[in-house]
Picture 1 (tube, rainbow, N blue to C red):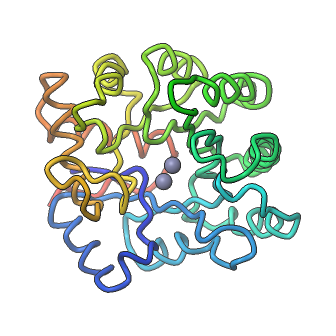
Picture 2 (cartoon, rainbow, N blue to C red):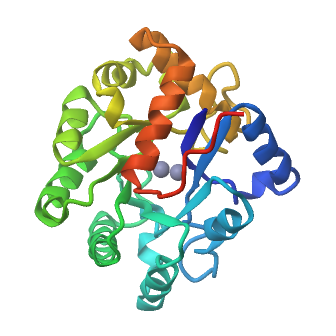
Length: 273
Ligand SMILES: [Zn+2]
Ligand SMILES: [Zn+2]
């Protein structure tokens, strides 16, 4: 039993075989999937992309939110739309939102403003947030700003969140745990240069951890460079299991339990088939 806690199944790269992708996930034991609802960004009418898939599939849940890449496009009508969609019964979190100082597709000040606006909306909706954080090369800049903004504007609400596709340091993982966040590890944990990610994954308590694919991006070794898909979250479990001397199935079971507990999903965990 595995849970892919973060993926983008609406992505155009799945248009030709999306149902096969869901079927392969199920066949691999991936019983639960969180589909991220950034869509094509503000003004495109696609914030409901993950909700649509969640309505069609048992065990698929959804988020809504504006990605930092598209922050500069956000208008009040987009925030209103997100508030409306966030009430859907299968929306369990707000995201992915955050700061990306690597690509800088939107000015950093605007990224921060749109992040803070969504933090307030998530608080009102009583939803945890899913964070995307990527600093410039050889810098901690986005982490410094993010952790400060979370301490000042989010921590006291007690809703917590998820550090998705964690690529930070052990210190940043500890700071995130102190803020009540769960750390989610993706397929890049298998990459040779990713020792910092493996160091963090060796330390984060197993009851505070998720695993994800971020598919169609970031395929784990030995699939690196190809399209990723939810079934391959099993490779992330295998790598973490190796680091922690725990069977991958056990990593899958624990991270699935974490997912249901964290998002307060009422339904029974689907039986392993
Ligand atoms: Zn991301
Ligand atoms: Zn993502």
